[in-house]
Image 1 (cartoon, rainbow, N blue to C red):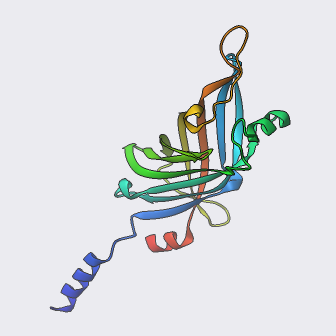
Image 2 (cartoon, rainbow, N blue to C red):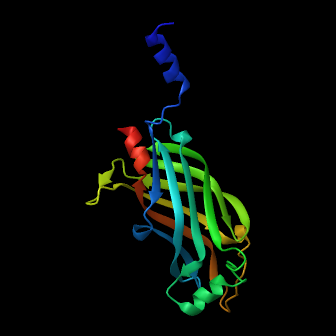
Image 3 (tube, rainbow, N blue to C red):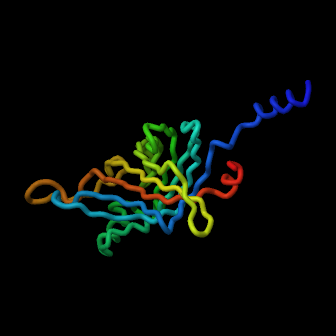
Length: 202
């Protein structure tokens, strides 16, 4: 076998990394927010601090992409200390026992230009359930003034808090309940491309 043939065999035997890019969240410019109905008449919004979030995006074969994220449950912030303390208690998140909220993708599907459907397992309050995220991502990367290569993404989903054992509520005299069951979740992410991935893609 000549040298050209040997190189061809070697190329086929080594998986290509050129189409895959690794990213990690810029926590200073990202947020994990939620919205839930209060008293049947208004919405209360809150946020969790993002501990970590990583994305391995394979442009050529999105099915090989992987998304993982971890939030700090005890960081819940709705702008009201008394309400936040109640949310951290055993009535809701029980953050002393379940300090984190985690997501890990099981399937990534491209559904349009810059649009993805990401299925995965969400673990919250000690319960793991399958959820689906609708993700919109910028098609292009940009470089900041410090040489970091960045990309943005917005992920949204709606979950029923009772599916995760968050069942506390109180009835209203007029009918209905104090806290809604459906929770709208929105992740606004600014991602830094990992240097080693940037180098391999050149």
